[in-house]
Amino acid sequence: MTGPRVLVVGSGWRFTSGISYYTCRLANALAERVPTDVLLARRLVPRALYPGKRRVGQVVNDLAYDRRIAVSDTLDWYWGPGMVASLRFLAQRRPDVLVLQWWTGALLHTYLLLAIVARRRGATVVLEWHEVQDTGEARLPLVERYVRAAIGLLLARVDGHVVHSEHDLGLLRASYDLDPERSPVAVVPHGPYDHVVDEAAQLADAPAADGPTTFLFFGIIRPYKGLEDLVEAFGRVAAGRDWRLRIVGETWEGWTAPLEAVAASPVRDQIEVVNRYVTDEEARAHFAAAHAVVLPYHRSSSSGPLHMAMSAGLPVAVTAVGGLVDAAGDYAGALLVPARDPQALAEALVELADRRGQRYDDPHSWDRTTDAYLDLVATLTGTPSPSTAPSENTAVPVRSAS
Image (tube, rainbow, N blue to C red; front, side, top):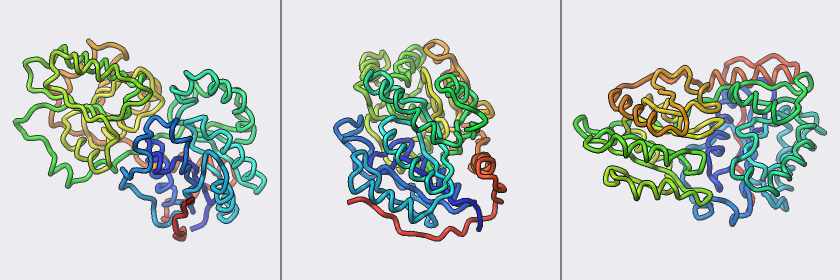
């Protein structure tokens, strides 16, 4: 299989997050079309600074990279031997396109070096934006100023950009003065997260036909997620109904308001909390056991849990904020509700309960994602967009920094 060789750079599994999963899913999808390699950040930040520091190094994923992909798990926030190994890997793989996953300023200094080296070797550099800046980082004045001061050095070495929605496109253009002629921006839809769905889990954990209606909130618990709104909404309408609310997520940034709201809820006995980062196997069981998913975000560019819900075919109530409107727009099972409105959310819960047992088709596909991605690559490199024939990328062992 011919085509440009792509090197995707993103988050590894040691500091597992949503970007770890996205990096893996994107790389696996690209490997079906073009030769693809992956360079991972094994140590994202000093462990003491990571919100999920207690679980760093724990294996929670069973999602794995395609055997055709060469993976180097060597990037290190401190650089050192890990950076030497990473630069050696870049030189050995000789990518035509370097794809940098952007969601945190913690990787800015590393991405800048990789972009400089890659461009000197003739590679095209693409920056894929998941956040213009992480919301937690944006509240730290020194970090926010550092990113604002230094990101121009990186942007000057980027040939093209990827965002996931028209909302993010507007946000990116409002934040940075990008020249569309020199570095075009492509809106590339997020692919499905069907790795959280399997028939065995659905059969084993499917709720009983006469059991309680179960609503699921899934994902990291952070200030912008709006979970306290859901707890309040559930408390307004759940009394006297055979309903359950299951909250599955790890608390970040010391945001305990939702859990305090649970403790004070008049329907506390109808709420279950799993306050940790769960494994892929557990995630499949939670989605299989749910009748509906509720995501009451105050803001968001994209949402892995939303794509999990759509892949599972579940009805989902999601707030009409940011890129979520685009992501859920073609999904028949989505109810869009205003943010920060517990009453509207309570009414949505009643409607979701009425949809119990219904399933919907996910309009998203990784073929659609890779088509858009490779169209951008073709524009940037001046080469034809690769066909849909499977790639013959040769397997290379995974490498890891010691």
